Length: 216
Image (cartoon, rainbow, N blue to C red; front, side, top):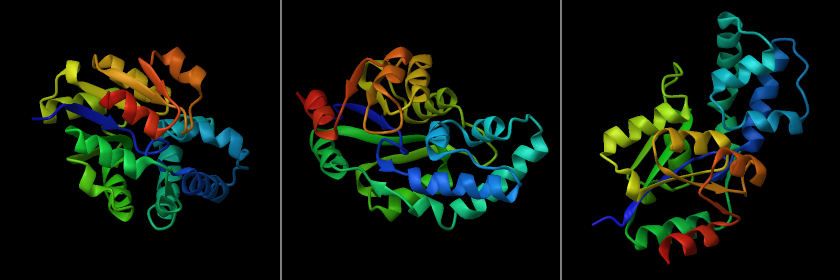
């Protein structure tokens, strides 16, 4: 019998996807003739749905321009960017320990599910997770709240035994919209201040710290 269900974000929580995402964003903006901002300015766009990120980056709500930017971004990301990526230290051992402690693990990412599955397989993390949930390429379930609602319905989860674990405010807000407990991790792209302001129930600075807290 499962001890509980843990929903893990992907970017900034399981893997450091910053290099590939930023290079692909810069590529898309350059192709469209737009000067890319600094890496520091781009990092805040790791986490939100791609449609929202490019709407802000382009400074335009023109759906045609947004779709063009996303298409160019995905041309690079789908062949190069998604693998310019690495698993955070301690993640593999932590997932092993959580599975051994009878937790059921799931991935819940705003990244398109087709890419998330390739990344999970590339880094040989499939054995830890019962299922990988992500958005559609159309943008459906790109909102973390909608995605988590879909995971809960698909898996028949209950709020009392389920945590959402992620590094950005979107993970915390999505969890709260669905009455789940939310753990913020500070090794990713969101600050402690961001996660606390979003209403995280707990903050963890490392995977071993998270494992100790959940298994004690």
